[in-house]
Image 1 (cartoon, rainbow, N blue to C red):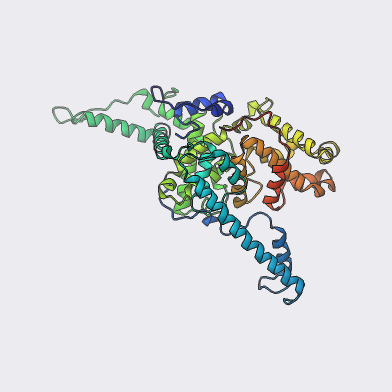
Image 2 (image 1 turned 30 degrees about the vertical axis):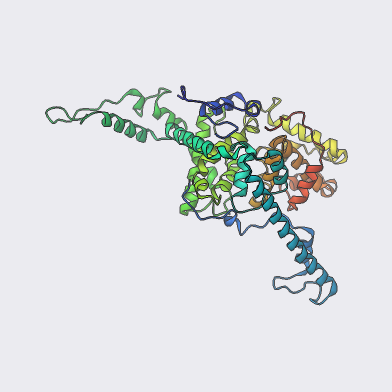
Length: 463
């Protein structure tokens, strides 16, 4: 179907990460590791998340929260109490310091992005500690970290235009309804003939319908057969998108914007399913797509935000290259399946804290598959609020050894961060805690993850 089209070479990283069934799609579609929706919605990055607070409060925040009522009065101390004033001043100083730190980081990242040749190693190092919201920074940096944009900024416009055009052609080829397909086919015929349906006497001629165009045709080449084959998958995607971050207006509700966002995400997931028949669509892929689509849709660059659907599709394919085997049940027991990955998490915990490992897996029999299956397959998108997910992904995508290596370190850090509570609990206590992970300071967890001794033997270095 895609024969004869000019293909872009796949980088070595893609060949290593993508299984054959996905790698062949990437090659055929022309998307490689070097890059090649909605109308202007007026959103600044994070605007739809204003009602959400970061998951977990820092030390000063908790102290002030304990001491202050909503009206600013003291809960335990009088407003002129020395301890209260000291904590309040420290809280203010911390906020001011954090503002300065964020602006300095924004300035550093802006500078890196103005270079003709992006230093990816330096960009990874800065972005790993968090990318400031707003201004389209995160959107551009994620595209670079995923390999969708090349390191040479002079090539960005060309690569983006080519990949967006390829996506439009793929949509036209795979997502058109059979009736629309037939209509366009008829229009093409009529454009090459004069009055094709009227004979010399002015009578209408019967137009022949090929077997492939008939709704009752059961042949695999029939557009109707393919349409009905994916109807159930399409309905499943619709149901899952209705449940995607239901408390965030960007994704939920019946507004024009949310409907358009859900339609774009459906196009991406359905196209991925059709191009990868051995995997198709698996519940949970919608959650993995959501952060990408949100970040690209809220890019401050109007042209980029208008093309969020095309860019999200390409980056979703690249991201799935590291984790698609976890969605394939036939590979569960293989060396690349989810059980092997859960075993690596267990080994990582044992290497970094054998006491906690023994308590969980030997004493309480709380194995990783009871709680970490969702953590790993959905890239932690169900364990934290949306702002925190974006922060975690900054670190995941910035890791030079790949998303999965950093993901296991974050999962291990999550266990270490609640060690005291785990050691004092039994099987049910531990299971409940880990299946409903508590609010924690995410920066503290990520600092722990950075200090964990990694096992890079199973991972490939990103190019």
